[in-house]
Length: 482
Image (cartoon, rainbow, N blue to C red):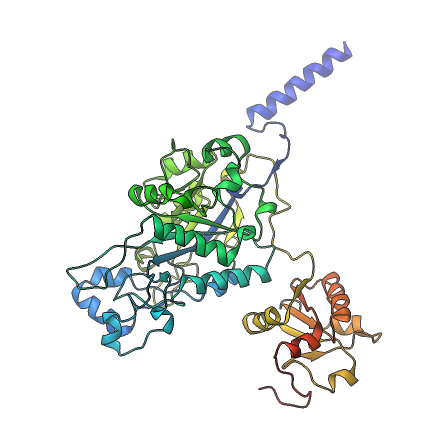
C-alpha cells in the first residue's frame, strides 16, 4: 500500500512538472560556439568619408551619402570593447597602385598611405569615394588581429565575414576592380593562413575531418566546444552563388580552405548562413538556428535605424536567436538624437544565446579571464606597452634600477617583505606588465599578482637584459618621462 502511494505521488509530481512546461533536468550539455550570441561591427575597417567628398556625394545622391555616413575606431579598440564579430571588404591588387589615386583624394588634396602602392589585397569600401580605411593592406589587419589575439589568448572566437569586392562603375570612371577568380581566392587563403597560422583558425576541415560533408559532420558532432574555440578566428565568405562556386572550385576549397561559405541548406558545405533582415526573415533564422546552423544578421543598415531611433530590427535580431549580429552602432553616434546603440540588456556584446535556454548548458567556459601569466619576448612586450596602456612594473632592486629602467615603469622590489602590501595598492583594472633583469623574479612576481586578483598579467622573458639586446631603450629613474 505504501509503495502504491509513493508511486502515485511520483506520477502526480511528474505530471505537475509537465503541465507547467518544466521537464526534469536533462544531462549537462557542453557549451558550443552556436550556443552564444555576439554583437559586432559592419565594415569594421571604415573611417569617415572626407568632408569634401561627402559634400559632393550629398549633392548628387543624398540617400547614398546618408548610407555612407558612419565610421569605426581601430579594430584593436573594437576587440578591447568586447566585439567578437568583424567584417572586411577586400579588393584584389596583385601589382599594387590600382587604387592609390582615388578621385576623392584629388578633391581633398590628401595623400593616401604608402600601402596602397604595394602589391596585395586592399581593404576599403568603395573605390574612389569611400576609400578611407585604418590600414590599406589586408596583411596589416591580419597582423593586428594576430597581435591582439596573442595578448588575449583566452578570448571568445572572433568571427570575420569577408566580401570579395569586384564591382565596377565604368560610367563613373572609378578605378577598375579585378574579378576574384580561382587564383585570387587561392592567394587570399594563403595570405590569411600565412599571417594567422592554422592554430589560430577554425576551418571547415577542422569540423568535417575526413568527412566530405560539413553539414553531415555538424549534424553528427555539432560545432566545437567554446573552450576549444577560444583564441581562434572563424572566417566566412559573404558572397552570392557565382563567386561562392568559384571559391569552392578553387584548389583552396580542400583541406587548406579558410572560409566557411554561404550556400543553400541542402548543400554539403552548409554551416553558416547570412540573413540580413531579422524582421522579414525571422522565421527562417529561427529554423536554421534550431537545426544547429550559425546565422549572421544585421541590427541596422544604411544608418536608418540610428537616425530614426528605431530599435525594432535590433530587437528582432536578438529574439531570432541569430548568433552573429552586426551593427554600425555598438557605440552611439552623438550626432543623432536618442543615442541608438546595439548591446545586450546587461550592456555587454556577448551572451549565452536565449534560443538555447531550455538546454542544460555548462556555462563555466563563457568567460575570457586569463588563467595564467603570459610571457612576452621583447618585441611583443614593446607592442603591448604601446597598444594596451598598461601599468609597467620593475621588480628589481634599487641598485639595479639605478642603472636604468624601461620608460614610465613603476618600481616595487620583489625581494622586499612589503612586496605583497605594495602590489595591493595597484589598480586591478589595467593590464600589468612585469620585468626584472633576466625574467626569473618577474615570472614569480607575475604569478603572485595573478593570485592577488589582477586579471591581465604579463612578464618579460629574458628581462631588461633581453630588452636592451633587442635594441629597445632604457632611461634613468631620474629622467622625466619622454
